[in-house]
Length: 209
Image 1 (tube, rainbow, N blue to C red):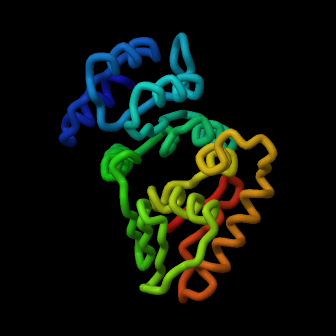
Image 2 (image 1 turned 180 degrees about the horizontal axis):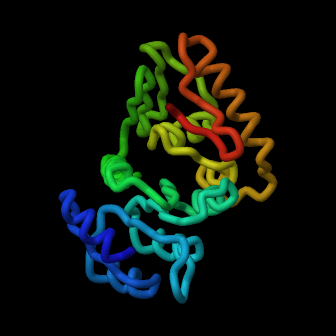
Image 3 (image 1 turned 120 degrees about the horizontal axis):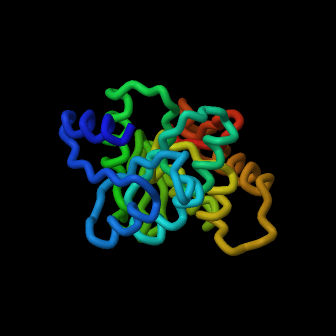
């Protein structure tokens, strides 16, 4: 599979560094700056989900998981661990290449100062938000939640990911808190507009699209 991916992605214009397991991948990151990581779930030595936090400490590169297990629980586990996307085997090579290119278009978090999607505009420095030119009066937590979702449109965030990214070390936050704040955002961001931007992805989490 590794050889097939190496050949197929190289033919589609990617520069590929293919390694056999997690420790080899971590060693690669010590000497190479990569733009996107394609990570198999079933790996020798360290499985892909266990490996994700280790990779995250070494790079901000987006991670696309690849697995023969396409059930919802496995997808959620991968996303909660920090993967940006998930593709189940068997896969279409053109779809895989499209997902990798999509991941490559996402800006690194440290480089983002403004976010624009559809008619939504966020200024992260001034912490202001507008939709269709109208100012949105958001609390600090509402702003952080909306900015997290809007950084990567189409990406689905689980409730646990949103708790980690928006609330951080606070220990008294539950998935119900996330649902409440999503409701607050919908009332302020979507209800006055003609079309919703904040969507519930059933069984997984939330997405801006």
